[in-house]
Amino acid sequence: MTGREIFHKMKEKVLGSSDPDSGKGKSKMKKNITHGFHLVKGRSGHAMEDYLVAQFKQVDDNELGLFAIFDGHSGHSVPDYLKSHLFDNILKEPNFWTEPAEAVKRAYGITDSTILDKSGELGRGGSTAVTAILINCQELLVANIGDSRAVLCKNGVAKQLSVDHEPSIESEDIRNRGGFVSNFPGDVPRVDGQLAVSRAFGDKSLKIHLSSEPYVTLEMIEDDAEFLILASDGLWKVMSNQEAVSAIKDVKDARSAAKVLTEEAKIRKSSDDISCVVVKFQ
Image (cartoon, rainbow, N blue to C red; front, side, top):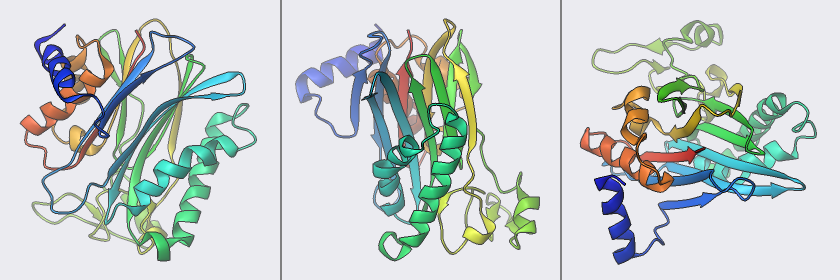
């Protein structure tokens, strides 16, 4: 056990483990597969805009691990809605078990349409998302829009399973929809000079120039898979994929690993909200 793990264990004994921004769980199908999560609010004046999901759920004779990071912008109503509804919409798709990737794409689109229809209630803000569904501890279905990221550690090497949807990369598509990408000195590229990602849920005022179609990939969990990291860009702005993997490769407890990453991001001066889920396969 590392020094950081011992420190976290001592804190939990003193303070208890009822922190709503930190938690852990494990699979009933395979006890060695565990998850942990931790959220930290950034230094901005607005309320926390990161939300996450981390749970194992029994569906008939199948077990699903449901994990997600939702990073909101211009308000927290949209990521809060996604936390409560996106996985339900995915699992309602009749072809989920036969064509899971297509089911996820369709559910993302349906969810985005609902958010836009409810803009009077939810506001005009939006959210990025990265979701991971672990099917019977064997298949990992990952989808994302925006710049929250999924990274798998295989034999100590980081493998990114998501795609960062950056305006500069998708500028041609944005222009074809009638929008533009700004490149002001000292700032990141932005859609219509406003949004720093090219795909997102919500954002009604920009939606005509944005996409909500997710990147989807299916990864088999084999013996070389050690753990999965899902995190908002508050982590990835200050750490590379390999740095994040290397930072927790010797941390056995999944929740402690998530805490190590969020604390390291703070040490590296990340000012954004930071949310992290770690799923341990070994």
